[in-house]
Length: 266
Image (cartoon, rainbow, N blue to C red; front, side, top):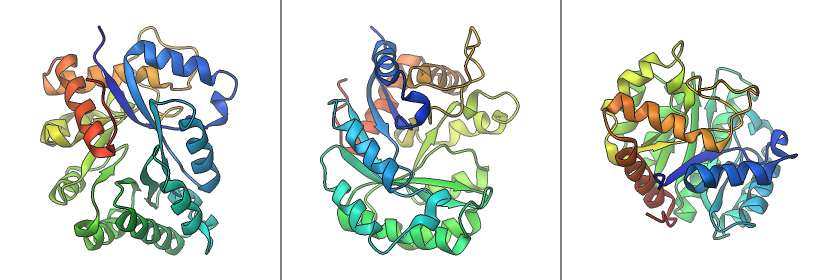
């Protein structure tokens, strides 16, 4: 029996899944996944993620506006997200945060959208699903201001520095690890930091269809990542931590179940 896994971040509404979404899900269940959290990255994507999550008891979703889409924030966006967040299968606020690497939205609008969504997380008592890239200098003070009022928070797809990791851990935040750790070119520093993450605050994710693990054998023909590939993230993290995949799967699945308030089927 395969170790049960939860993918805490998959963009299942992405257009690359439109032709074979059911097959992608079936492959994930076969690989041992017991639940998936579908990421909402704008109001439309959050609505689509919610609609998809409503079709299967092991699918859940988040509702939020990614910093790339912060310029789309309107006066009624909070109300629309609040409606989604009231649904049982919508289990977190986000993806929200700051991204100064791409700067697809003006930075002041990114900060405003982040604060508005942190307010929603405080109001609903739901956990918050966070993104940060090249913006730690502004991100940390905002999080520090809100952290005592938030129930739980995860920095998803963490790829940052040791100092950033220590700052997030000091705020009692969870850390999401993706296939970035499987990249021998960019992920070496991340692999070295895994041991510093408390085991009860570690979760794993694919961020599908992005961040295909480079350790997959045989190398797939497509660059599209799928949730079944979470097993490759699990293997690399387990190797770095010198744990069995079964032990790490149980730990990260328990963590995700507790964090999002969902059954883990362990």
